[in-house]
Amino acid sequence: MIPIKPVGPGTAPGAPMAPAATTVAASPDAHVASAAQAANAYLKPGILNLQSLPPLSLYVHFPWCVRKCPYCDFNSHEAQGGFPEQEYLDALRADLEGALPLVWGRRIHTVFIGGGTPSLLSAAGIDRLLSDIRTLLPLDGRAEITMEANPGTFEAEKFKAYRDSGINRLSIGIQSFNSRHLEALGRIHDGDQARRAVEIAQASFDNFNLDLMYALPGQSIEEARADLAAAIDCAPPHLSLYHLTLEPNTYFAKFPPALPDDDASAEMQDMIEEATAAAGYTHYEVSAYAQAGRQSRHNLNYWEFGDYLGIGAGAHSKLSFPHRIMRQARYKQPKAYMQQVAAGNPVQEEREIGRGELGFEFMLNALRLRDGFEVNLFAERTGLTINAIEAELNAAEAKGLLYRDYRIIKPTVLGQRFLNDLQEMFLVDQ
Ligand SMILES: C[S@@+](CC[C@H](N)C(=O)[O-])C[C@H]1O[C@@H](n2cnc3c(N)ncnc32)[C@H](O)[C@@H]1O
Ligand code: SF4
Image 1 (tube, rainbow, N blue to C red):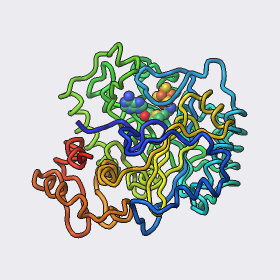
Image 2 (image 1 turned 180 degrees about the vertical axis):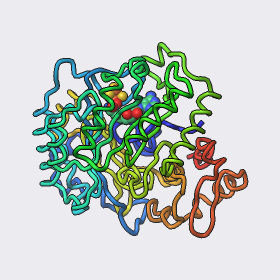
Image 3 (image 1 turned 60 degrees about the horizontal axis):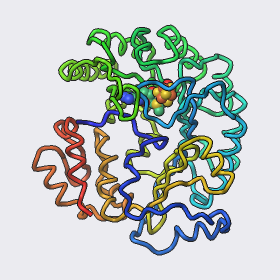
Image 4 (image 1 turned 60 degrees about the vertical axis):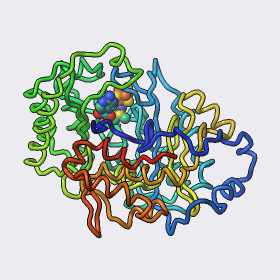
């Protein structure tokens, strides 16, 4: 089945860290090496020759929430009476400083502050974070700067201050406007707070996304339709519509709620296609719908196999160098992360993506895009020629899962439906 859960560097990037081609624990004495020496190790001759480096994004993970939702497997921890705001912001700054040699001179095109619930941060906290980022990195003047926000944390003044500090896009975790379903999802807000959150967002932000989930416990098609209509009524420039999935190691996995059956959720998916199209939204990625020109630039960079530096607890990075592409993951537990930053080594796992994995990793991301990708992008981002996946492309085309011409490669309607099967065709034995 199609992966419908969002992917982001906070928890699960486009591709998992394991199995690793070359898994190495980050060098324990990395912090004593000079910044230049550290960077040199990544610049050595290697398995690839990239003609240019891709666009670079910054992801910042905030790992606390008021309460852990029973369906959620993101790296989020109950704040239980508070969280160490200053200490965490200090750690983020030190983390970023330590990572600078890996991205020296590269402009940042988008920033995403995700979680967790980053809207638990005070206005002064967000202001400090953004000023640290601007001080340390060349942030593009037109950068898209998104923050995730939970409707249970909305205060008009605070959100106005976020905007004044430079946040220019909000991603609001509405999930549903129906209080009964919100309760079943263990959310900290009800339907009225969801509506109020959108009003507050609209007062200061012209660019925002609403996250909605469907196929919720006990949800009928009519209720799903009413939820989507309520969301569309708010005229959000962007909508993320996720089929609720039962993730391993969550409360729902242990105590599964009664969910709509496959026929009912397929009917909901059809309803979503019709209603979003009628309201002028383009379905451009598995779960993402946008008004013209309002696609998420940050997420598009993931799907186009761009680079991202992820700082904060559990954040993942994918960074290209002229002769290699690296993945990194930082310590997940907030306390361990802060301790490791203080010790000069927040990276828990680091590995180079092997040549044999690159085709799959690229396709895993790019095939999520309904319009696919330009053929040249494959070589640009992987350093391989398209011939490296010629046999797999032909096989997918023969099965009717893939369309290709001299210019573009994209999943067919059948390929979109069986996206996992299509993606797996590019997984070659190492
Ligand atoms: C990283 S979460 C953070 C958003 C924010 N903390 C919140 O919940 O309000 C981003 C989105 O992923 C979606 N999501 C999380 N867990 C999911 C699951 N098990 N199935 C489907 N969607 C899920 C939700 O719509 C959520 O808003
Ligand atoms: S608020 Fe968001 S990140 Fe936090 S537990 Fe709930 S779904 Fe997960």
